[in-house]
Figure (cartoon, rainbow, N blue to C red):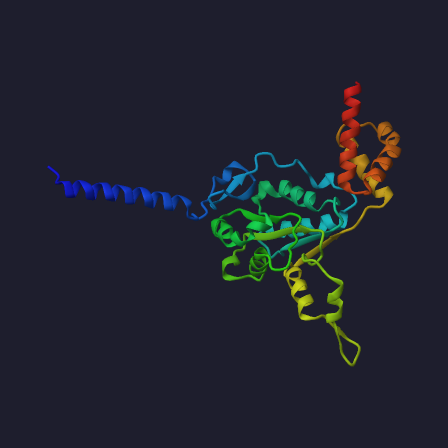
Length: 296
Protein backbone atom coordinates (compact mmCIF):
# COMPACT_ATOMS: atom_id res chain seq x y z
CA UNK A 1 0.00 0.00 0.00
CA UNK A 2 1.42 3.39 -1.04
CA UNK A 3 2.17 5.90 1.65
CA UNK A 4 0.71 9.42 1.47
CA UNK A 5 4.16 10.73 0.58
CA UNK A 6 4.44 8.33 -2.36
CA UNK A 7 0.97 9.27 -3.64
CA UNK A 8 1.80 12.96 -3.43
CA UNK A 9 5.05 12.36 -5.35
CA UNK A 10 3.20 10.42 -8.06
CA UNK A 11 0.69 13.26 -8.44
CA UNK A 12 3.50 15.81 -8.66
CA UNK A 13 5.32 13.78 -11.31
CA UNK A 14 2.09 13.45 -13.32
CA UNK A 15 1.59 17.23 -13.23
CA UNK A 16 5.21 17.83 -14.24
CA UNK A 17 4.77 15.41 -17.15
CA UNK A 18 1.63 17.23 -18.29
CA UNK A 19 3.42 20.57 -18.03
CA UNK A 20 6.35 19.29 -20.11
CA UNK A 21 3.93 18.00 -22.78
CA UNK A 22 2.25 21.40 -22.97
CA UNK A 23 5.58 23.22 -23.26
CA UNK A 24 6.77 20.85 -25.98
CA UNK A 25 3.55 21.36 -27.93
CA UNK A 26 4.23 25.09 -28.30
CA UNK A 27 7.97 24.87 -28.94
CA UNK A 28 9.16 24.91 -32.57
CA UNK A 29 9.42 21.37 -33.92
CA UNK A 30 11.79 20.10 -36.60
CA UNK A 31 10.22 20.24 -40.06
CA UNK A 32 9.00 16.78 -40.99
CA UNK A 33 8.95 15.37 -44.51
CA UNK A 34 5.49 14.99 -46.07
CA UNK A 35 4.26 12.17 -48.28
CA UNK A 36 5.94 13.33 -51.48
CA UNK A 37 3.63 11.21 -53.63
CA UNK A 38 0.66 13.44 -52.80
CA UNK A 39 1.55 16.33 -55.12
CA UNK A 40 4.14 17.91 -57.40
CA UNK A 41 3.88 21.32 -55.71
CA UNK A 42 3.97 22.28 -52.04
CA UNK A 43 3.50 25.37 -49.89
CA UNK A 44 5.54 26.02 -46.79
CA UNK A 45 3.31 27.44 -44.08
CA UNK A 46 3.77 28.47 -40.46
CA UNK A 47 1.08 27.33 -38.01
CA UNK A 48 -0.06 29.63 -35.19
CA UNK A 49 2.11 27.52 -32.89
CA UNK A 50 5.16 28.46 -34.97
CA UNK A 51 5.56 24.98 -36.43
CA UNK A 52 6.40 24.88 -40.12
CA UNK A 53 4.65 22.38 -42.40
CA UNK A 54 4.75 21.50 -46.09
CA UNK A 55 1.20 21.48 -47.46
CA UNK A 56 0.44 19.78 -50.79
CA UNK A 57 -1.04 21.89 -53.58
CA UNK A 58 -3.83 19.67 -54.81
CA UNK A 59 -4.65 21.58 -57.99
CA UNK A 60 -1.70 23.09 -59.84
CA UNK A 61 -2.62 25.51 -62.64
CA UNK A 62 -2.70 23.52 -65.88
CA UNK A 63 -0.23 25.84 -67.59
CA UNK A 64 1.93 24.61 -70.47
CA UNK A 65 4.84 26.25 -72.25
CA UNK A 66 2.84 26.38 -75.48
CA UNK A 67 0.17 28.47 -73.72
CA UNK A 68 2.62 31.34 -73.24
CA UNK A 69 3.00 33.65 -76.23
CA UNK A 70 5.29 36.58 -77.04
CA UNK A 71 7.93 35.62 -74.45
CA UNK A 72 9.89 33.13 -76.54
CA UNK A 73 13.35 34.36 -75.46
CA UNK A 74 12.46 34.22 -71.78
CA UNK A 75 10.83 30.83 -72.25
CA UNK A 76 13.90 29.40 -73.96
CA UNK A 77 16.24 30.58 -71.18
CA UNK A 78 14.19 29.22 -68.30
CA UNK A 79 13.38 25.97 -70.07
CA UNK A 80 17.05 25.37 -70.86
CA UNK A 81 18.11 26.05 -67.26
CA UNK A 82 15.33 23.85 -65.86
CA UNK A 83 16.16 21.02 -68.24
CA UNK A 84 19.82 21.15 -67.18
CA UNK A 85 18.70 21.00 -63.56
CA UNK A 86 16.35 18.05 -64.07
CA UNK A 87 19.04 16.10 -65.95
CA UNK A 88 21.52 16.57 -63.12
CA UNK A 89 23.72 19.07 -64.95
CA UNK A 90 24.93 22.41 -63.49
CA UNK A 91 22.17 25.03 -63.45
CA UNK A 92 21.58 28.46 -61.93
CA UNK A 93 19.25 30.08 -59.45
CA UNK A 94 16.95 32.35 -61.45
CA UNK A 95 15.55 35.85 -60.92
CA UNK A 96 12.66 36.79 -63.23
CA UNK A 97 12.03 40.54 -63.18
CA UNK A 98 9.98 43.07 -65.09
CA UNK A 99 6.52 44.35 -65.85
CA UNK A 100 3.60 42.90 -63.93
CA UNK A 101 1.36 40.36 -65.63
CA UNK A 102 3.85 39.45 -68.36
CA UNK A 103 4.15 35.76 -67.53
CA UNK A 104 6.90 35.45 -64.91
CA UNK A 105 5.00 33.19 -62.51
CA UNK A 106 3.15 31.41 -65.31
CA UNK A 107 6.44 30.45 -66.93
CA UNK A 108 7.66 28.78 -63.73
CA UNK A 109 4.39 26.86 -63.38
CA UNK A 110 4.58 25.78 -67.02
CA UNK A 111 8.11 24.45 -66.48
CA UNK A 112 6.90 22.52 -63.42
CA UNK A 113 4.12 20.88 -65.43
CA UNK A 114 6.51 20.11 -68.29
CA UNK A 115 9.17 18.41 -66.17
CA UNK A 116 7.13 16.97 -63.28
CA UNK A 117 7.17 13.53 -64.90
CA UNK A 118 10.99 13.72 -64.83
CA UNK A 119 11.05 14.36 -61.08
CA UNK A 120 10.75 18.15 -60.85
CA UNK A 121 8.96 19.43 -57.75
CA UNK A 122 8.18 22.94 -56.46
CA UNK A 123 8.00 24.39 -52.95
CA UNK A 124 6.48 27.86 -52.62
CA UNK A 125 7.86 29.93 -49.76
CA UNK A 126 6.68 33.39 -48.70
CA UNK A 127 9.38 35.95 -48.06
CA UNK A 128 8.38 36.09 -44.36
CA UNK A 129 9.40 32.43 -44.07
CA UNK A 130 12.71 32.60 -45.91
CA UNK A 131 14.54 32.38 -42.60
CA UNK A 132 13.40 28.72 -42.54
CA UNK A 133 15.05 27.88 -45.87
CA UNK A 134 17.84 25.81 -44.24
CA UNK A 135 15.18 23.59 -42.61
CA UNK A 136 13.37 23.12 -45.92
CA UNK A 137 16.59 22.26 -47.73
CA UNK A 138 17.51 19.79 -45.02
CA UNK A 139 14.23 17.92 -45.54
CA UNK A 140 14.66 17.55 -49.31
CA UNK A 141 18.42 16.99 -49.41
CA UNK A 142 19.34 13.54 -50.59
CA UNK A 143 16.04 12.84 -52.36
CA UNK A 144 16.00 11.81 -56.01
CA UNK A 145 13.58 14.57 -57.04
CA UNK A 146 14.75 18.04 -58.06
CA UNK A 147 13.18 20.87 -56.06
CA UNK A 148 12.56 24.48 -57.08
CA UNK A 149 12.12 26.78 -54.09
CA UNK A 150 9.71 29.35 -55.54
CA UNK A 151 9.40 32.90 -54.17
CA UNK A 152 6.73 34.94 -55.94
CA UNK A 153 6.65 38.74 -56.10
CA UNK A 154 9.79 38.97 -54.03
CA UNK A 155 10.97 42.30 -52.66
CA UNK A 156 12.42 43.46 -49.38
CA UNK A 157 12.49 46.54 -47.24
CA UNK A 158 15.72 47.52 -45.54
CA UNK A 159 16.55 45.30 -42.59
CA UNK A 160 14.10 42.45 -43.24
CA UNK A 161 15.45 39.14 -41.88
CA UNK A 162 14.47 37.16 -44.99
CA UNK A 163 16.91 39.23 -47.04
CA UNK A 164 19.98 37.95 -45.23
CA UNK A 165 18.62 34.40 -45.10
CA UNK A 166 18.12 34.28 -48.87
CA UNK A 167 21.48 35.92 -49.48
CA UNK A 168 23.15 33.26 -47.35
CA UNK A 169 21.44 30.42 -49.24
CA UNK A 170 22.34 31.87 -52.63
CA UNK A 171 25.93 32.27 -51.48
CA UNK A 172 26.18 28.50 -51.35
CA UNK A 173 26.61 27.97 -47.63
CA UNK A 174 27.10 24.50 -46.21
CA UNK A 175 23.36 24.32 -45.47
CA UNK A 176 22.52 24.99 -49.11
CA UNK A 177 25.13 22.83 -50.81
CA UNK A 178 22.75 20.28 -52.29
CA UNK A 179 22.52 19.64 -56.03
CA UNK A 180 18.76 19.03 -56.03
CA UNK A 181 17.61 22.51 -54.97
CA UNK A 182 17.41 25.78 -56.92
CA UNK A 183 15.72 29.08 -56.09
CA UNK A 184 13.41 30.65 -58.70
CA UNK A 185 12.11 34.10 -57.73
CA UNK A 186 9.93 36.68 -59.45
CA UNK A 187 10.01 40.38 -58.70
CA UNK A 188 9.01 43.76 -60.11
CA UNK A 189 12.26 45.16 -58.69
CA UNK A 190 15.52 44.39 -60.46
CA UNK A 191 17.55 44.53 -57.25
CA UNK A 192 14.76 43.36 -54.86
CA UNK A 193 15.15 46.39 -52.59
CA UNK A 194 13.75 49.93 -52.86
CA UNK A 195 16.04 52.42 -54.56
CA UNK A 196 16.17 56.10 -53.59
CA UNK A 197 17.27 59.22 -55.41
CA UNK A 198 19.58 60.13 -52.53
CA UNK A 199 21.63 57.01 -53.21
CA UNK A 200 22.89 58.60 -56.43
CA UNK A 201 24.93 60.95 -54.24
CA UNK A 202 26.96 58.00 -52.89
CA UNK A 203 28.51 57.21 -56.29
CA UNK A 204 32.23 58.02 -56.50
CA UNK A 205 33.99 59.38 -59.57
CA UNK A 206 37.63 58.50 -60.18
CA UNK A 207 40.14 60.69 -61.99
CA UNK A 208 39.93 58.56 -65.12
CA UNK A 209 36.15 58.99 -65.33
CA UNK A 210 35.01 55.67 -63.86
CA UNK A 211 31.92 55.62 -61.64
CA UNK A 212 31.75 53.38 -58.55
CA UNK A 213 28.59 52.89 -56.47
CA UNK A 214 28.62 53.53 -52.74
CA UNK A 215 28.42 50.79 -50.11
CA UNK A 216 24.62 51.07 -49.75
CA UNK A 217 24.07 50.60 -53.46
CA UNK A 218 26.57 47.75 -53.58
CA UNK A 219 24.66 45.98 -50.82
CA UNK A 220 21.40 46.22 -52.75
CA UNK A 221 22.96 44.93 -55.94
CA UNK A 222 24.72 42.07 -54.14
CA UNK A 223 21.57 39.99 -53.55
CA UNK A 224 20.31 40.04 -57.13
CA UNK A 225 23.82 39.28 -58.38
CA UNK A 226 23.72 36.01 -56.48
CA UNK A 227 21.11 34.73 -58.91
CA UNK A 228 23.13 33.18 -61.71
CA UNK A 229 20.47 33.79 -64.36
CA UNK A 230 18.48 36.99 -64.84
CA UNK A 231 15.44 36.89 -67.12
CA UNK A 232 13.79 40.24 -67.92
CA UNK A 233 10.19 40.77 -69.02
CA UNK A 234 8.88 43.86 -70.79
CA UNK A 235 5.46 45.47 -71.38
CA UNK A 236 3.64 44.08 -74.42
CA UNK A 237 2.93 46.08 -77.54
CA UNK A 238 -0.63 46.33 -78.82
CA UNK A 239 -0.07 43.57 -81.38
CA UNK A 240 1.55 41.30 -78.80
CA UNK A 241 -1.31 41.87 -76.40
CA UNK A 242 -3.88 41.02 -79.09
CA UNK A 243 -1.96 37.86 -79.99
CA UNK A 244 -2.05 36.74 -76.37
CA UNK A 245 -5.75 37.59 -76.03
CA UNK A 246 -6.44 35.59 -79.20
CA UNK A 247 -4.50 32.62 -77.86
CA UNK A 248 -6.52 32.55 -74.64
CA UNK A 249 -9.79 32.98 -76.52
CA UNK A 250 -8.83 30.04 -78.72
CA UNK A 251 -7.93 27.94 -75.67
CA UNK A 252 -11.39 28.69 -74.23
CA UNK A 253 -13.14 27.59 -77.43
CA UNK A 254 -13.53 30.77 -79.51
CA UNK A 255 -13.61 30.48 -83.30
CA UNK A 256 -11.24 32.48 -85.54
CA UNK A 257 -14.16 34.74 -86.51
CA UNK A 258 -14.97 35.41 -82.85
CA UNK A 259 -11.32 36.17 -82.10
CA UNK A 260 -11.11 38.67 -84.97
CA UNK A 261 -14.35 40.36 -83.90
CA UNK A 262 -13.15 40.61 -80.30
CA UNK A 263 -10.12 42.81 -81.06
CA UNK A 264 -11.82 46.19 -80.38
CA UNK A 265 -13.29 44.91 -77.12
CA UNK A 266 -9.93 43.48 -76.09
CA UNK A 267 -8.26 46.86 -76.66
CA UNK A 268 -10.98 48.66 -74.70
CA UNK A 269 -10.59 46.16 -71.86
CA UNK A 270 -6.86 46.91 -71.70
CA UNK A 271 -7.43 50.66 -71.89
CA UNK A 272 -9.82 50.57 -68.93
CA UNK A 273 -7.22 48.73 -66.87
CA UNK A 274 -4.26 50.79 -67.99
CA UNK A 275 -2.25 47.71 -68.91
CA UNK A 276 -1.63 45.47 -71.92
CA UNK A 277 -0.32 42.50 -69.97
CA UNK A 278 -0.79 38.80 -70.46
CA UNK A 279 -2.82 38.70 -67.26
CA UNK A 280 -5.21 41.35 -68.57
CA UNK A 281 -5.55 39.43 -71.87
CA UNK A 282 -6.40 36.25 -69.96
CA UNK A 283 -8.99 38.08 -67.85
CA UNK A 284 -10.57 39.56 -70.97
CA UNK A 285 -10.80 36.13 -72.62
CA UNK A 286 -12.51 34.63 -69.59
CA UNK A 287 -14.96 37.51 -69.36
CA UNK A 288 -15.88 37.37 -73.05
CA UNK A 289 -16.30 33.61 -73.22
CA UNK A 290 -18.22 33.59 -69.96
CA UNK A 291 -20.67 36.21 -71.22
CA UNK A 292 -21.18 34.35 -74.50
CA UNK A 293 -21.85 31.11 -72.60
CA UNK A 294 -24.58 32.86 -70.58
CA UNK A 295 -26.19 34.18 -73.76
CA UNK A 296 -26.20 30.78 -75.47
